[in-house]
Amino acid sequence: MIQVGRICEIVKYPVKSMAGTRTESAFLGWHGLEGDRRFAFRRLGDDGSFPWLSASRLPELLLYQPLALDEPGGESLPTHVRTPHGLQLELRSAELNAEISQRCGSNVELMNLKHGIFDEATISVISLATMAGIGREAGLELDRRRFRANIVVDTERTEPFLEDEWVGGTLVFGYL
Image (cartoon, rainbow, N blue to C red; front, side):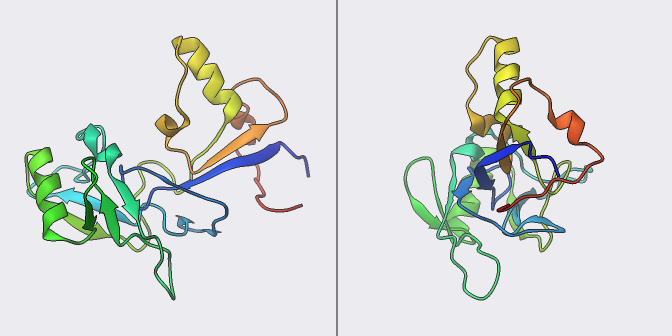
């Protein structure tokens, strides 16, 4: 086994396209991190192949913060959301639904998806070196949160895109 680095951040996104929640540890299973992207708002009346409300359609969604990630006896899931104006609303409330519908310009409904809703894969891993390399190329200092990764790795090597070498291999997370 070759050690490629150390995990420096683990983040769950309980509600698709809302702010992430940092955690010290997480259970990783077939459907990604437990509690990750288990909720999503669906645009009603959208018959397209991707009905989910995302930050690309409503950037303000990133300013909503899931809260109270403490559900006994199962996955740790949010019960409330802090809005960009600082209000704390129940996740399943008519008030939150109405606010997001109004911002979106169409009616939405909250869906609870047992196995999560992912754009590409059930887990996202990126290295600090890759983030820095992208920032250098763009001429910007990039915030980690832009990448919406679940696991951020501080690699022992400093060149960007080392993740390409990991494709087809097995990453082992945890204490050695």
